[in-house]
Structures are given as C-alpha cells and as structure tokens.
Amino acid sequence: MSKADIALERFKKGNCAQAVISAYAADFGLDNDQALQVSVGFGGGMGRLQETCGAVSGAIIALGLSSGFKDGDTRDKINEVYAQVRRLIADFEKEKGTVKCRDLLGCDLLSEEGHKYFVDNNLRENCNGYIRLCCELLDKYFAENK
Image 1 (cartoon, rainbow, N blue to C red):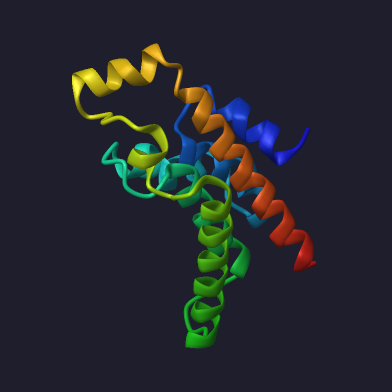
Image 2: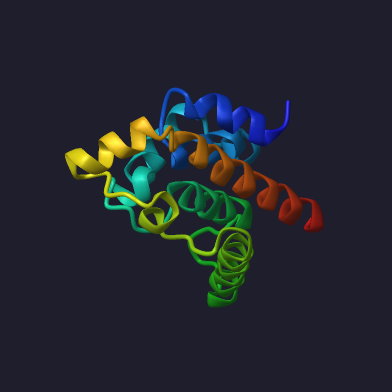
C-alpha cells in the first residue's frame, strides 16, 4: 500500500493534515497518536480558517521530521528545511494553482452555507486529490535524498 493510499484511508477518520503526516510518522520515529495530536489543528487550513491547505501543512511537518533537526543544529539546517518547504509549495501550486484552502475549495467552511456547499458538492473528494499530491511529492523528495 502506498503512502498516499494509507493517507487516504486515514483521512476517513481525521483531517487532511493528520492524514498526510500519519502516513509518514513511523518513518521518523513518531507514533500514530503523536502524529494525530501534533497535526490536528492544521486541518481545514488551520482550524477551518482555510489558510494553507492542511495536506500541505502535514507534508511540511513530514519535511521537518525528515530533516533530523535537533537542538543545537546550525541555522544552515533550518535553511535547508525552508528550501524544501518552498519547493513543496511551488510544486503544489504548479499543479493546483494555490495552497490556500479557501481558494482550493471555493467555499467558506465556517459559514453554514459554505459547509453545506462543501457537503452537497462532495468537496472532500477534492481534498483526496490534495492529499494524494502531497504524498506523491514527499515520496519523490525522499527518494531523491536517499
């Protein structure tokens, strides 16, 4: 089963950020519950504010975990992660046009009408595509850095 398939299965029980990071967590020594806890607030573009897509946020957390960054590391290590994050965002935007959840979904999840629109138009399916793309990008980056 691919990481994207794992993430999509986990998305059925959680949010987009949780889905992405939980598919990779064990690879970096984080157990599933910890992954769910650290990422829960990033769903719906950060607490349903629809800012940065939660799948992108989950992928950014995975990039941070993959860096092995620890207390005492140099600023260069931080800058390496920042460069990876910029690449992820650029690659996502190349495919989807934006990383902003509100623009990706075209509705306001905090309003009753927007949430109804989300449900009635099965926009959760769109989120599946964002999750899959983030996992595919992570798989590509991690394979390049082996």
